[in-house]
Length: 266
Image (cartoon, rainbow, N blue to C red; front, side):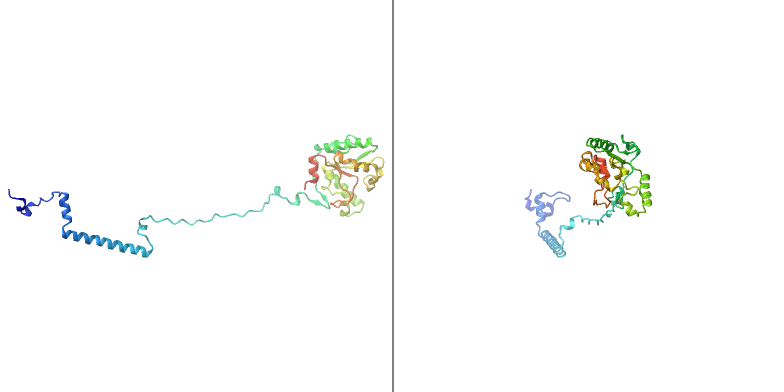
């Protein structure tokens, strides 16, 4: 067999479709003509990418930003409608003075119910609230031990009773309503409606009943010193802020919570 070098090159070529060995594949890559084509392709790619990069830089974009998903622009947020606070027109929460009105210097008072009143033992025609009645009778016994006889002249009065006292005497005495209000409350504005007020006289000096001269009786002197111990106070002392005339005979019970709130809660 002749040497391998003597076999023509064409004869040494493998048939079409035969897989080349790695050595033969590398030989294919390093053939001069194919190396030139490969070098030219790489150069073209380099030039193209460099130009594309320059374009991205000129336009302020990054070559990698194109691969990112576009960010969504947040939708505009419309602020919720705000309703301004409305004034409180609920009469139950009102602090208006209409809840405690006055008329001619007198405060308005509710009328006590018949079921809330009792008759005094010593004077059954006079009615008071139970606490006031008990305190008054205890006080009269204490005064009697000191030689003073207290007389209850008037206790509870209804609106109708007060209307007669106010307008009846006003007409009989030819008084203006302003003058009359100085010594008597209009109906609806008398402390006698509450069942806590009582007019007191001196049994030894009946001529001073419901008169400013009661100031000079033993009964008044005793009351001025001792009434507070039994829960009673003078309703209209001299120069009182309501502008009502001095009434030394008119006293009110403030010896429990309900009576205190009746006269002092504004």
